Image (cartoon, rainbow, N blue to C red; front, side, top):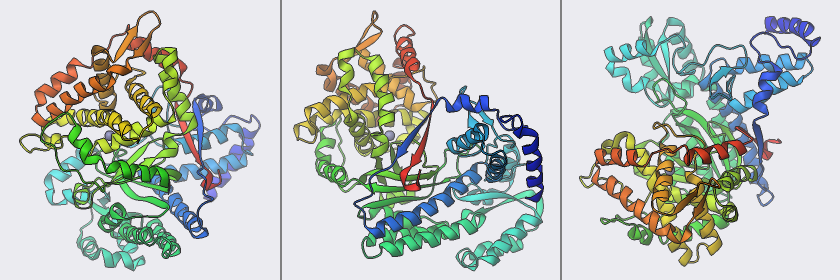
Length: 593
Ligand SMILES: [Zn+2]
């Protein structure tokens, strides 16, 4: 630390003269500004005035856990992240916070680490750090995939621990083994919960060509023990007023140390909470670019929207009827008490931070089979004014001007909500009782996501007849269904969402739901055709899933992914041209931002 500081003093003398010139490895003002010019800031700040003092106190404790998770997530992705941030903060201070370093601090926040996504969609360090590692901080930095593969090949018994969703892989050096044993000794609770681990580590012969894995609870012992304590404090505060939520927090606090999420997941998915909810844990694997198996920390504090959640529960009363109305035979029994709620985001941390509109967890199939999954609809993202404004513009440049006003804030909200419920309806196994993933393979996601999109649109008419939607809402949901399929670029086949959206777009054009006008470069929506065309496409999708016919699936995808520069290209270009922002940075009122 001392060395860095004197070095920084030198920097500050040399560089403060020129003001904006930073030491080597730090992006110039020009470079950072180019990205920030394309970045929009969105504030999430739901009204917390109806909450009790206990609930507000609990939120504070939870936010403290969130901050710990934020740091853990950055370390999971880049081992050098926190160090590089500290150096940047010192540099910023020593230069009296010029725009150049302030910009880099914003870039760090935006990218949750020292590597930026550029305007050319490339990944590049903007601080003096090494290039990004595919395995982040979860595998040894000096180990190649080939080396790990070979090791796993000759040590198959270590496969399950090394590729476990919540372990860190290490080289079996004497130093690493000793350091892990020291941690176990320092925190007896871990030694107690992971009794075998101590024996295993003690028996291990150091060999730098060998590897072993330790649970996150050991690898991140101090921050997770601190998180456990804070979760228990929040649980104690809410014990009387919200016993089920309090119980969930207590269970989850123990999970963080046992590295086993079953009790917390069960309490989370089956619990009935009052005003608050909280996503706590390490669940999604998107950031593991080496093996795609390691999960990353995420944390969200959510405030329930009781009216919307109640309305939704009423609509869930029709869920079997809606299932029976879908265009296929062999209907199934649907669980009516699906765990689903509509929420405002109070604060997002780590892997959960971003513009995602809904969360469904847990992923581990054993627990989701045993206890179900919970759906969290993120309302203040879905209804965020800046996001809505830019998505409205995409729609408005694509359709006839008089239809541009059909899309309102409700459209995307309900379309997304029923997309999530749509995953529960329709075909879930083939006629031969096989898993859809296993039979349709890489096509499975395309059909599953398209089914969910189409179910959402298909049931809208029936829900309007039942009084759940107004006529205006129905029209807005239909408009949102069209906005959903628009593309600003020709999708790659490896993008399942965009591919299935393009397929819908083409099917709608072919079947007269959409009509393209070459002169204006815009489309007309024929609402009178809407339900029928959706019905026709949904029939086809459900049939392909039920037959489990991979060849038919491939053919159908091939048939409906055509891209015509004179049609799709024109609309894509018009959309691109009106898009001012490429990146979005979220800030949170509950964090004093
Ligand atoms: Zn989906």
